[in-house]
Length: 87
Image 1: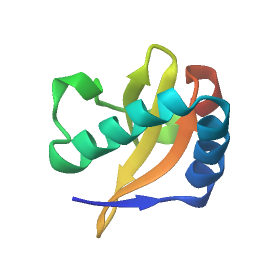
Image 2: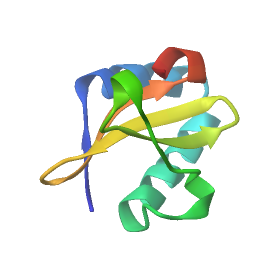
Image 3: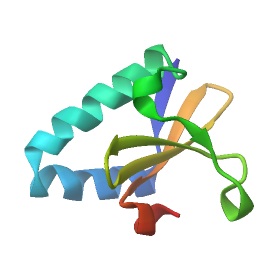
């Protein structure tokens, strides 16, 4: 699937990369898995509800999540951050 990066996602991702490059490698790895096999168990994929209905979440680490939705083109990465930041 094709991956699109939303503007909010990009801004936050740059800050995360600057802060801790090693986490950047984990993020890249999980995005690649998402693109090739969205149902992989390692992603801990789950559907969101309430105000985030229509969005999905994957886990990068214990308290780092990526929020995304499926688009006409593929997958749109909407947000990244801790549990409290993105929910």
